[in-house]
Length: 367
Image (tube, rainbow, N blue to C red; front, top):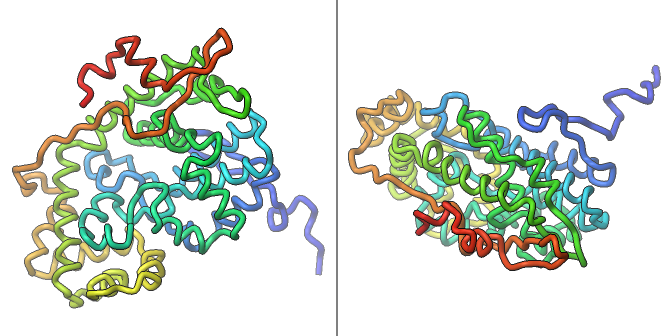
């Protein structure tokens, strides 16, 4: 047998990913092998078939990108920041893996799907939040104990860099705003490079330099515009109500008549569903399966067929007339603080407080 050359694609650990937002993505040598192992796992590959914006694609047809690409992008930014700020290797690994796995618990169609599950979602702590126990169960299937501890401490705010993954200026937002605006075709991309270059590490804390405050303000404004024009588009909300109603009925009715009904729903219909089985079946869910189910429902002639047809045929005339216009504040007071470092060498209170003192326009319509 001929030995493969040293540079063969079959035995190289090094790998590059061509990304629509960040160009060529590569990871530090200390984390790239572990990142690749997770990318190749069946549980993580499920995110290839989970769109990032769900039914938004019915209004913005090019918004078909996936949570898979978003998670890779977030991990890439984590690696970039950790390298720039000189994180220790253990912290870098925890940070990058936390970024990579932060959306592992997202179901098909995300929030609309969870709303349809109703009480079951609350009972099983099935949440899109980074620190949900549901996401932790999935992470346990991918990571060793030491990695799990590092990820948990990062997500729960016990690391000096935790705010970089959950705040009004986190790397998750930087990636999804850049990615979602690009694929939706709207002009709300933040200046991510400038923001990352505005981060500084001082006395084992990470700060945003004072010079980056205006760029941070711009990111929050762009986020509020994305919610107004894309995420909470009135027609998108209307289609999501149709989908939520279908899922609610699938759970409550106990119907097993659809040949394409995923095992997750059959288990969820039990009065006391087995959590381990739900996790197993959840990992098998994909939007492909959900679209197939909607297609079968649409031709069934039952009470749900009209709702499924409205989605599949993108029939705005059939959307319910009581769709309320949703709004989202430009910032969240419940998020972790984003500390700012001033030119005089002192650390500051939260970014939000600084912007309030500057009478930022972000707070004119804040609720």
